[in-house]
Length: 142
View (cartoon, rainbow, N blue to C red):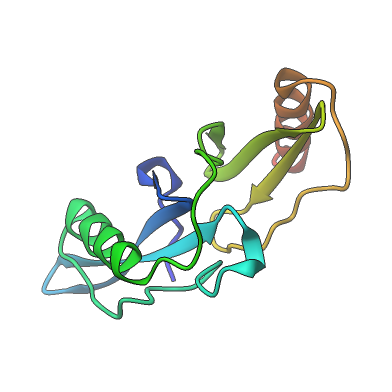
């Protein structure tokens, strides 16, 4: 699988739709998608790949396919936009959220929807993002 195109991801009804290039046919890219759910593993679609089993020839078309599938198959009611504070750094997805006055984050590498965040709490989004950025910069030094 090619890298997940986090910069083209869309938050929709409690899900984050993340497109990626599934393959190529005659130099044309075929797109698929993966989902993250704000309720995590409580959703049957969390970290799933293309539950609609349909593909698109553009990022827009695959996002539309994913939205239609969510509309038809939604399994929870979103409490807001959990994914509004998401950032991409060095092709990594960082989702920052606040709960009970504390700041947490989820961290996904470019090729996988496995959360690799360290178990650490922060007092602000800035502190969290700064810490993650330093870690990624240190890991990528030659």
